[in-house]
Amino acid sequence: MLELKDIRWRLPEGEEILKGIDLTVPDGKLTVVTGPNGGGKTSLAKIIAGLYEPCGGSIILNGEDITSRDITERAKKGVAYAFQQPVRFKGLTVRDLLELSAEEKLSEERICSLLGEVGLCAREYMDREADSSLSGGESKRIEIATVLARKNADMLVFDEPEAGIDLWSFSNLISAFERLKGEGSRSLLVISHQERIMEIADHIAVIADGKVTAQGSREDILPRILKGDTKSKCPLGKTRKEEC
Image (tube, rainbow, N blue to C red):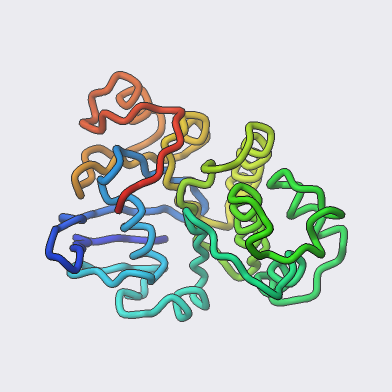
């Protein structure tokens, strides 16, 4: 279980972005964090991954305080993070990235399964370099596949995974989330505006202006979002790039 307690963070210029976030991500459940642009969702995801250091508060993973741990140490503790804008890797193939994530050699069958879950043909992609020759959408899908390949990761964090992928790939992604949720062995935290992703969530939290304005079960929160009474004013079903 992941617990965020009074998480605060500000830009180097001094502007406060996160203003005391309290959030719990239960074991084996899918939690969606949504809300308007600039509310602090991506900043929060990067704090969980260890890319940003909070100005205050604590991060508790499975009963251990990991607030001071860096991104490498958190990865060893089981935190896996998929960037909103994936990193390119010149000289490494897609197969290399998947095997590095899995920490073992993978059979072609396993590679086909991982790439198939994000809508890519393994024969076309497994031996391609993961560099600038890939489109933004292709890089995004490959990075999601590397997260799915992590065997030791029990806390998976996805920052707007729907960004830059087509409808068919998005449907495959939904299926992958449903499968992971059904296994019950991993916790998923997904930053998203997509109603389709919220529909399969167990829990939803709305973040606006650096604060959690609503959180609870999908059955409670999603109808409130659709009615616009969570103070998020966030239209669903659209892909947007968060500013912070």
